[in-house]
Length: 400
Image (cartoon, rainbow, N blue to C red; front, side):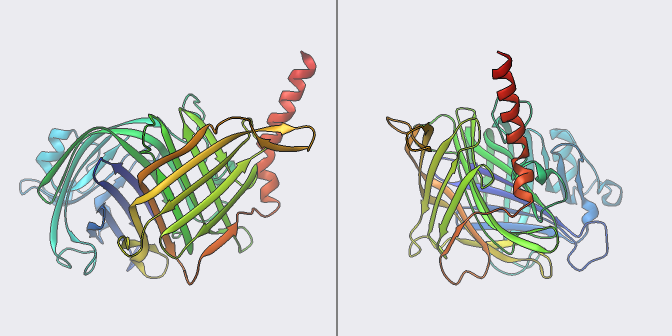
């Protein structure tokens, strides 16, 4: 499977556009091109077993699908139409979508995804149009760096882990409109987020949180997640991370440069802590997400699975109360350990009522409390770039 996830946060609501393709290019009962559009606690789905209607670029973000064409267009010869101008797209495509590096266009004529199946006629009909431009602020790394990094360390660029996860826009701004069931939402410079997943399927169990709409902050974005992934030789590990982009600076709490711990309930509470002590900018971070299960049960929606295809597999909310604090650390010669710098935190209890939070897979019988760990020799390999960087610094100091 390959999946693309985009979140648009408006003042009073949030949208997620989730695209996926399963078992492409081969005969399979699970072959499927699909888009799900989520709005708060409801969503629409449109899908087709004919994956020749789907296209994607190899080297950069460019993907789309034409579920149906306008009456004057030859369906058989136009299935792979790519990168149409806005005028051409509206003239030719009756339902589908086209997502380019900085422009999103679509008309989903689907049905209520909470009931029935994923194919046409298997639920209550509904429609969503979207047309907006996106301006990236942060990819994955310092905003002013031309070398963006892999989510999960440099080994994640290779076929080492399963599945794969890459945040492509940790923070961005979107301008345009979304028409949801005949109601138009117009927006300018609205917070936007993008990521991609690919592999055999999503993790067997995971959690995910995200927020880039903090009160009073111009540029503050946090992405955190953890799950059970496969590593070489048939092994598995439970890995988590917390990553913050603040005014263009990247703070990454991962278990190969520091620590990361989580306590996530079956639904309603996500408590995450982390630190980094071997990177250029030592820091400690705490973040919490919460919602009342009685008033916010979340939305259960579909995700690809290896044996059953697209089925109900995760639960989300866009309305989690979120609190984030981040402290800079300094080395204490007396105690021989890192301590918080004197004074207020760099980020002092930033808050939002629009945190995105998710649990997926399972089983979720009880709270999931874990310390993120990376097994050797993978941990040593992931730390290699940081050790090399420290060696270069020492050599520069010696020369000077």
